[in-house]
Length: 449
Image (cartoon, rainbow, N blue to C red; front, side, top):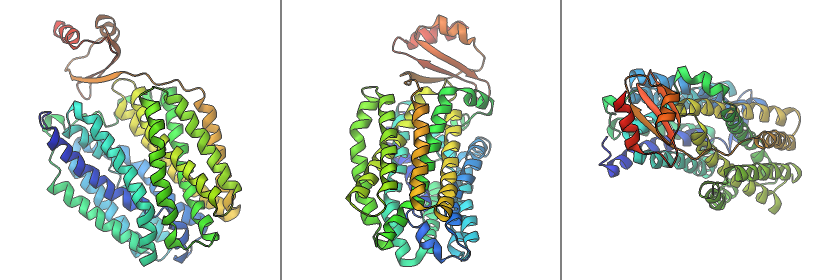
C-alpha cells in the first residue's frame, strides 16, 4: 500500500483492530466470572476452573509462532481465517458444554486460534514505514480497550445466561471478524506479503534466546500475566464473599480500570519522553507488589481493597504498555519479530500458569495465598529488574538487499549505523541508527558494493 494514502491505511488498521477487539473480547469476558459461574458445570473444582481460565494461554503459546510463520507460506488472510474458524468452533464447544472438561476443551480451542502474529504481520504489510508505529499503537490500544469492555460486559452476559451466553456472544463476534476480514481488509501487495518484520525468523531464535536483555523482558511479561490471571481467580471470590452479587461485580471493575488508564498516562510520559523507562518500570513493579500484599491482608470489600485494585491496574496497565516499547528498542537489528514472538509466547505461558496455580491455591490453600504468591513472584521480578539496562533510543530501518554485506565494515564505513544484520531468508538489510546517521551516506555505500 502506498505511503501516499495514510487515511486509507488507517482505515485498514481500524478494521484489523476491530477484528482484534472482537477476538480478545471473547477471551477476556470470562475472566471476571469463570470462578463464579463455572460452579454450574459437572465435575468442577476450583483448580479445574482455574485451569479452564488459563488453558487458552497454553494453546496460544503453542500455536502463535507456527501460525505466524505459516502465514508467510499460505498468506496472511487464509491463516487468520483459519484461526478465527478454530476460535468459533472452540467458543461453540464451550457454549454447548455442561461439564468442566468440555469447558476446558472449548477454551483450549479458543487459544489455538492464535492469529496475533499473522495480524501484526498483515499490519506491517498494509502500512507504510511512517505509519507503522501509529498502526501498532492502535492495535495495542484495542487490546486494552477490549479488556476494559470485557470487565463489565462479561458479568452482565453471565447474569443473563451463564458462561454459555458469553461463549455464544464470542462465537458471533468471531463470525463478524471473519466478515470484516474478507469484506474490508485488502490483500497485501505480493512484494510485501513475505518477510514482514512482525514475524519471527527461525534462524534468529537462538540469537533471541541468548540475549540476556531480552530474557529479562520475557521474564517480565511472563510474571505480569501470571499475576493477572491468578488475581482474576481470587478477586471475584473476594467480592462474592463480601456479599456483592456476581452481576454487580462490574460496578467495581469498570470505574477502577478507567481511572487506572488515566492514572498511568503521566508515568508513560515520564518513561517515554523523559527517557526514564527503568525508573518507571521499577516503580510499577513496586506498586504491583504493594497492591498484592494489600489484597492479601484486606480480605473483604472495603475502601482499602478497592484502592489496592486501583493501584494494581494502574501498575499493570503501565507495565503492559511499557514492556513492548522497551522490547522494540532492545531487540537487535532484524530480530524484532523474532524477539516479539518469544516475548508473546512467554506472555501466554504466564497467563496459563497463573490460572493453574491460582486455581490450585484456592482449592487447597486459600484465597489470600493467591495474592501472596503473586506478590512473591513480583518480588523476584523486581530483583531481576534491578540489573536491567535502560534501552537504547535508536531508529530502525529495513532495506531490500539481494546480497550479503559485511556487518563490521558497514558499521565502520557509514556514520551513525549502530547495528546491522542481513537476513538471507528475507533478502532484507536491517539497521539501527543514531541521530548522526545520514541516508545519503548509506545509499552511496550500498551503490559502491
